[in-house]
Image 1: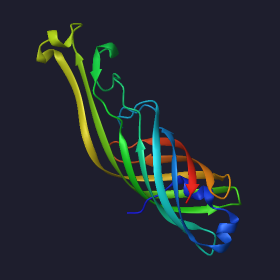
Image 2: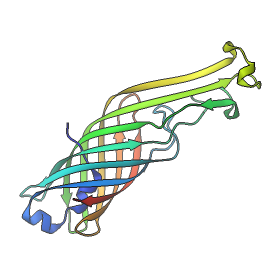
Image 3: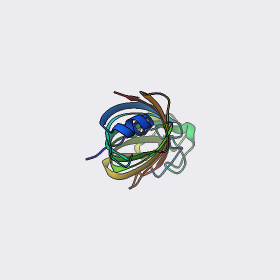
Length: 199
């Protein structure tokens, strides 16, 4: 499966495009999706790392692949998930994780600005457990039928697409602003800021 890295487009400069070659890069950054009860994503910042390869063509387009690992903020005890007051809820919830394999296509407008499109598959892992007592008593003082549980443990594959605006800083470094959309039962839209380093 093909993968994509936002940073790849950042290093696309006119000298690179003029001579044409294959290169590799790594990147790291932060992403946010905002609270999404359907996707079980919390409101906060996650992190992203990845690597990729690309090669240039005669018409200045760059094609390649990326592998990306993302995390999101763990979902909070919101009413859409469990019908009780927030202070009554205990959580054992992990961040959602996504391992994405994407193909990339990039086009440099000039020495500094490039755009990139990406598409592929993302393997997601969701692990959410919320427990709430229906009374104000402590958990060790209530019967089982007075406990409400919300439990989701899922993993699977879903299609993913992404678009990036890349600003080249120098021959080896770039900054990438991207928006990504994952489809499927736990699909969500995320925004990210990444820093790329050309190997």
